[in-house]
Image 1: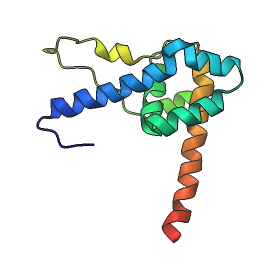
Image 2: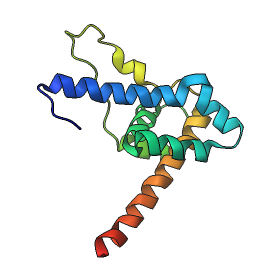
Image 3: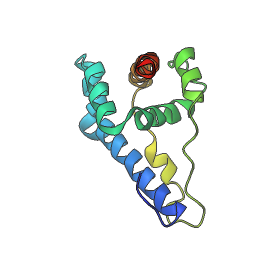
Image 4: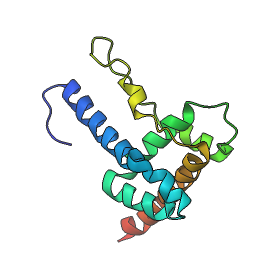
Length: 136
């Protein structure tokens, strides 16, 4: 990240990065279309490559955590989602106090569950490759 004069500048840039990631997932029903055409894994890999695993996982986990009662999310996915921090809402004095909800993914839980599984697998792959890199 760049240099910021205030923490609000950093928060705003971070919010816009998350919003861009959500837009890539939701525009033209991209996530649904990838799921329905059996290209979800490829779509998720491209999304992660463009927006980063942390941003993709943060959006997925915060959306999944909004519905703890929903049995369509697997228990493993719910546990994974709870490891991520909640996206903090904007302060009360800002013009958009509800902008936090603008980052929720409005998609069928079965699709989000599968997308989260792909993110979990990517995390696992990355954690297994780190010890090899450190040994060099």
